[in-house]
Amino acid sequence: MSSPPAGDGNTVGRIRWTAVGFIVGSFLFAIGVPLSMATDLSPTVAGWVFFVGSVFFTAAATLQLITSREPYETAEASTQRRVVMGLALRARDLDWSASAIQWIGTLAFNVTTLRGALVAAGSSDASAGLVWRPDAIGSVLFLVSSAVAFLPEVRKRRHDHVRDRSWTIAALNLLGSVFFGLSAVGAYTIPASNELLNARWSNGGTFLGAVCFLVGAALLLPRRSRSRT
View (cartoon, rainbow, N blue to C red):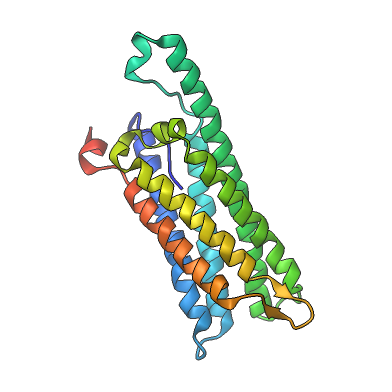
């Protein structure tokens, strides 16, 4: 989860709000895990915390998708214009692709968390498989998106404002997607017993994935001196 280069003031502001959205969403996902395990709390509390967190993810992903289509220029364009602009166009297309894939993934998380919250509240009788399926789809899409975003040319475009943090941000996002994928595997409900395949994978994967995304989003925040410029 990251955002393209800082160009004008609008872009810097959009990057900041993108990071804030992912930070809040990740925080809510992280605290949702212990809330779901608390025996003295209604499961409804954790269910709605997860849903609100997914909404923040979608809001941040929407801002990222908008920013991914903005023009891209580099200092080398004056001497290697054709080559550089060709690479820039490819980076822009790949950036948009990764952003679009992730955006669809957040919509899948909206669906699975909403269904889970409604089931916990007793307002829906959706089956475990119906709740789990969007979670699995969203996790796969996040993993694909993070893998594409790890490419050097995409990182250069996305993290131009924090170049020294670029690899760390992308690595944390990719690791977070792996943990989310592990969580989805563990959350699969075995039809015969109606029990989770692995509760530790489900809870641990969600918590660790959220922490990775939270730190990566915090590193994405524009530096104060850069944003003033």
